[in-house]
Image (tube, rainbow over all chains, first blue to last red; front, side, top):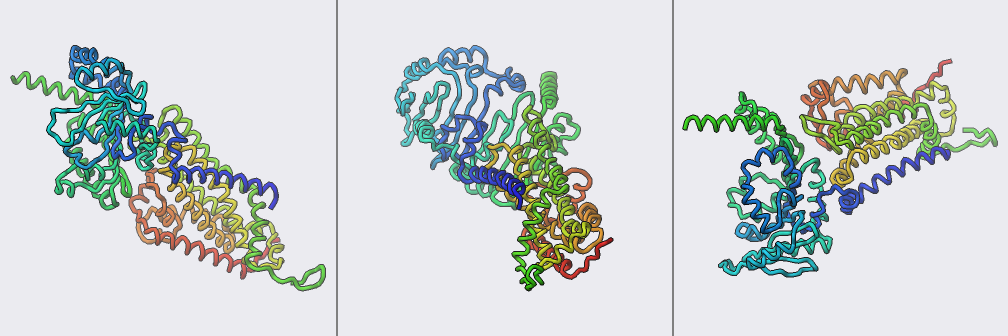
Length: 337
Length: 281
């Protein structure tokens, strides 16, 4: 073998070895998500405990500035009510909040104490002093946990033997955590110990698959269903779904994808068939209704193996038509009255 | 065999040692032949395409849409594996290299020199076949790897790396099986290139689009059953193939692919051992 050939073999081998090495490290050591990519979800995920079964994210700033939101401004609370809230808390939801992350940590008895399972993290500009004073006025206490300020409120009037005492934690200069005292403390611990949802490879795989969405949610469906205290009949009737993810992009219109992973191929196929049936029925019903027809046409079912996916795209034009239909119906009702 | 230098009989080399010697000799020849320039151009196509897709996506545009939905990253990689590598590059490399293993030696009238060496005739073909496999794998697999890393974001790596390994295994198996079949064609027929092209781009394409059992006499039928990606609909031919597609089980596909490989490679060595090659003057 000549030197030229040896060099060629060495270069080809090196490309393969580097690629395979990188991939193997990525797949089996769980490093890559945080190491190679800054796009692996928002930074707030580092505060979400590793046992969270559902994680949801919304880019509030994007949604607030979207064309779609402007359509709904008419039904929002009056400016007077908003000003009162802003005066008391120093928070203007529209201007100060950038994004919100919500997580569900399933616990026994979650059905009776849903608040105990939730954690909300909001990236926002806040006035800590104003919020603390307001909380103290309403009977809350200000404590410290791992160097972070917590506002805790214990409901002393409740008859519940295991009440969920709520807490509000200032975890970063522009990040607040809200939930029960335990869940807010768990969030601070998760960040400090680096044992958070980012180290949960299965969950992060779903997060990483989300592209171009300003609102999304991913999670383990079965973990929630087990703890939600659903009646046995309902649980038995539900398809065996293990993972799900939903992602949407809101601007002038709304587009999104819902994906689910069934426990076996047969369930996934049944689910696809059922969805296809509903879709066909919806398309039939939507005939001769321009807005609805476009909406029905935008629904696409896909998936293979264990996965099922439903994608939709509602362009601004469809919303215009739907808005027009709603207005004409309203006018019709007024005329009849 | 008489050693000219000292008049003693030189013992014949073992099959394995002879194949290895031919492999060493042929690998360099194949890598630096004009045919490799053609192969480099063929495998550079997907890399170039991946660069264009990456460039388009960097500007926030979508390079591929299916049913109005954006296809990005691993989806595009899957389409490229299916349409460029498995349906075009693998058969074309199999035809050009496989048929040339023996035919080139006959055409260049150098086969006599190989056959007069103290090695089993069949080992010449096996050594050349292994050199073909090494040469094509060394060019095609790095290309697949580069395309993968260009198209798939690092963040999606843990979720998709397993499929890349399956794709690479599939490409290696495809090159091995097509190479084995066309090695036989090259050793047996007089105009092997034409026959090879007709088989890969005529017979296989037509038969796959037709209902019936004939598709079982193709390699693509079993190879496509192993593809982890959904078959993209890229026109009338794919639509027809999709309509009549019967995916054989994994074990059946693997069995027939390895049977084709072993069977045709055995037949090719038998042909080389028995055939009297007449060199045209």
